[in-house]
Length: 335
Image (cartoon, rainbow, N blue to C red):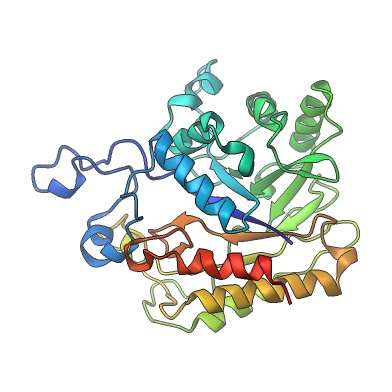
């Protein structure tokens, strides 16, 4: 199996409360750090600190992932529609893309491949054929990079909310790719997206059983069961199975968070449980080889979703990197 992990870029830039005299914690904080995360969940702080916006830290993360048998980072990529003609040129300075830019500059990026997860949701949705064409032009330098992930020789793009695009937009994406002498695009739609619309594969960002407004603990086994139920696929649309490594977004809930609505959380996760979920995804691919990718790709949510509780990167609470060690042993000694 080839394991890819989602990489969230919210750990750079300037926090919205940086100038607040009552928020000392925020003065040097990245964009998505919250008071709740700092004060109530300090064990989630990465071993390199809350910020990931240096080349040294990116190179350290690449080595940690590669040494653990992980094959690639799937970087979350965000469209900024400011209605200006140079939108794509401003992307390099966007805090949410700092990590991707650092990866491209990393001296050791030959050890770990990468691809894009297009966060096509509210606030960042790519609307209309013109914007999709412009976005595709932005993506070409990534898609033609020697370290970019391919499926059957085609660059892989994962689309969050592919329903917001459609056949015409995906056709424009394919056209731009072919203009760069690429053999086409492998488009994996998260959750929805038919073959007719242009999605060649199906996957998820994560699968979370939940009742909004009800803040209550549940077992990790329930979380895994919900993800396992999403492994489907067909010969026409192969599935890239998703394994969700955790979910507990309490740091982002309420006024001391990001004002998100409370929901279910799954506090009993462990390295063994995550490894077991990966092992089951591998077994599913073995049993359904005609419904998954020939490359046997599995996606994991996530490398560093510290605010949402989905992370396998080493933290103060896991300084020895037990999640990564569990994955390394699984890859080295598969059943």
